[in-house]
Length: 359
Image (tube, rainbow, N blue to C red; front, side, top):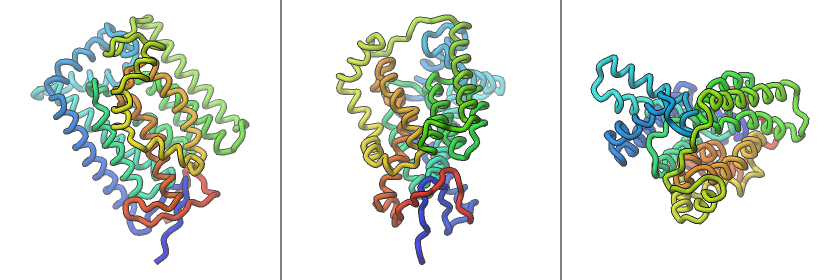
């Protein structure tokens, strides 16, 4: 029996499984990884701590009494607040804790499922995509330093994966709807318009892209500027919440993050060797993934090292999940390294991202 050709950039459909089997395997693995990662996080700090400390932070945001940047991240905090009030109305025991658990379970299940689909769209097999999901779970269990549930960070993962899937599927107009939500969650969503623009440039290998791409890019970027700027007009420019390290942002915080040993230990524990493996094989990435890399990585790391507490390595989940995990696995696929017990085939050079093989 001959092995099917694996085209990098295509969603690989296994000839040995039906679509229904693939769906249930993906969902089952996502649920299993979710249960483990949520159990691990709750076990680490205890649910009572989250109920007391994090709920108070949510209330400060809803009252407009928080600081920069938390006050402007309303989307997920509003979902959390509404869920708690719903559970209180239903008369559930420990409504705050139950709401927190419910939202985190949903967030992780969606993130693992979207990541698996995203990796398959990039040309990985189901087995390789699930291995990537396992890498994500590893990182989540090592990215808990000095943090709470940080719901907006996990929502950010799903928003970026959704943006990537829409671009790979040639449905960029849906980004207009996505950008009605994303800027209310985190300012990092400003990378999403550039994901579209740079992916199209990389795909066509030229600065000249079609008019529709430029229009969608301009509109989504304008939406981001309007929402992020509008929130600051409504709430005002609030005092910056200084990271727990007690160091002021920009240059002092950058120097602190670069020189403190915990930064690099915790980054390695969360990211592992995957960034190095991915960058080492970047020439074998599909052009869209290269576009995503230049839209995210050059701004993400300097920004978070200068404005945030870098040892809180959950801040780097998005580049890890969107860039480094698939980049490393695609490199292994190209160079013929067996992954998940499967023989590898070199990808076709003329593949097109987002097209599915006929079953």
